[in-house]
Length: 511
Image 1 (cartoon, one colour):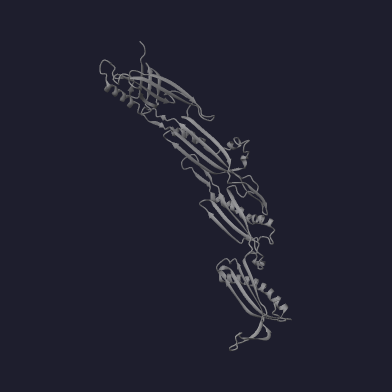
Image 2 (cartoon, rainbow, N blue to C red; image 1 turned 180 degrees about the vertical axis):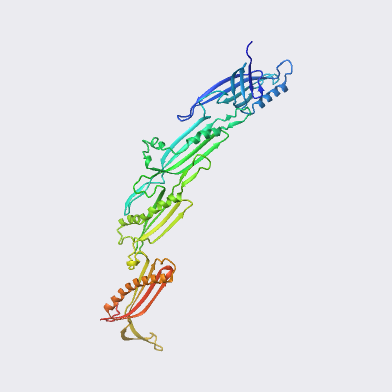
């Protein structure tokens, strides 16, 4: 007696038993992609209204059996079993790829209709396979390109070599489309969805790989991996639960740290130097302004909660700034020197502004230098502490002394009468000094500092007085006052002399 063939899906038993067509597809989407085996089963059969065609056939009975078949295949992952006697031909928990599709009945839906069902699975129950990754398509790519906004600058300046590095952007893209894995219990559920299988393929392959630069870019970009610092690691992911896909993209900023004179490996800088001259001022101003952007070092780890920023942007920006700050004067001088200024730039900045954007990890700065003349007080103990010095000299020269005699009714005005003498000569000298205020909060300290500044100013005024006394017959001091604003470090003194020349002629002519 021949063995009987049976076919069931879950609790549904096919009668009559339909034909099945089994096909296996073994695919591999790339050299580093897994080999994947997918089995498709196409079921082609006939629904009959009644096992006894002479009995209870009819539209209602056929519709009932059509609905029963549809209900049986509304859920995935039921046990699909095809047996020939006691021998398993197919035993698997498939996904219903195409639910029952019914063709037009040739007997007006009263007796029979044909149907087609497509199932898909990767591994049969009890089958051993080396194809363990449940993904049917994968993709992995690396790209390396120079970042246009970062270009290398190198120049030899007074303090040595001034350098900012070039940078490259490394991009790593991973994607996969997974196959949902049935739980194997016949309950209709999945032990893992397709996107989860895709994610499990993507995640182990994430991370920086120096060989992608040394090997992949060899002969094209030709940078030295050992000279590149890895910063600003960013990751994004995209999961699509409908089509069972998962993708991740990660980027790095690779900064050339193997350059002599580089201030810091953890930041980039952009700066400009502007030279300003004006007819209204004898001084030339050179402005150095720039921005430092710190770079972040991240560690994503492998488990939830592992993510950490090992070095934040501001820490790297500050480290870079501590070196760059000493180069600003040399940068200004390197641009202004070719202009052949009549005086060299003063080493002390005329003004400066430093802005710290800690949350953004950035430092912005503006320094202004000029070629102002030296300060006379910048000697001795006051060297380096004088911020401003203004010396003003006013000379009152001889003018005619004459009488103005009003005459009643005289249409030409008063009578001017020469009395053959001139006014006295006067010289007024004012000195205003701004110095760094003394540290501490003590009247004694402030007064001691004032005396120090006052002594220096007195030495300058003494030079003016000596000039007068050596050239004049008589010198009288008609004015002497001073002021001291301790909290501002501001001191001023005004002195006026009236004098008579030794051989003065009292000439008032300007011709």
